[in-house]
Length: 187
Image (cartoon, rainbow, N blue to C red):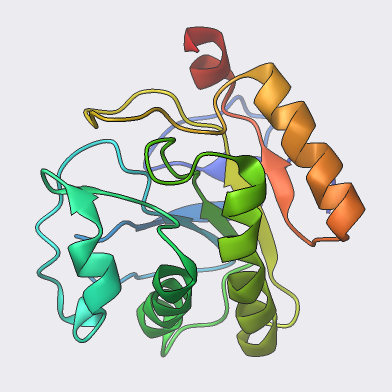
């Protein structure tokens, strides 16, 4: 797959010479069941606003449901959260072909202070996802905007991206970076 992959986002129209290779499927914590019609990218919870955590796919995933501030999810809030997140993703995708890409988002700095702490929570998730979906590509997107109070996203600016890239290389992770250019400029 090329380094830049056009993804069909809702009904966004691209210029004629650009053909999206994947469709985006929302995978946030209040999403209804997914309905992919071809190869897809599962765009998981991004913690921009409050969630109700009431979807059946979250049944018994108590760590995920308890990890929030004013309803805004606290992503990557420990290894137990990461294990439940794996269950969440596999439940959401059950009955459909495996996603080509899973797009994840960073935690906040008030409970996950460093990229190394994030990686400690992330590694078991990556291992489990690769057991369920051996060919999966997992990407993490930089984030900036949110209604969350208490901390900021730990993968926010250019230097954060460079630091995580070094950790990925050193730890030989399969995780890749996904740049949200407007968020990078906003940060």
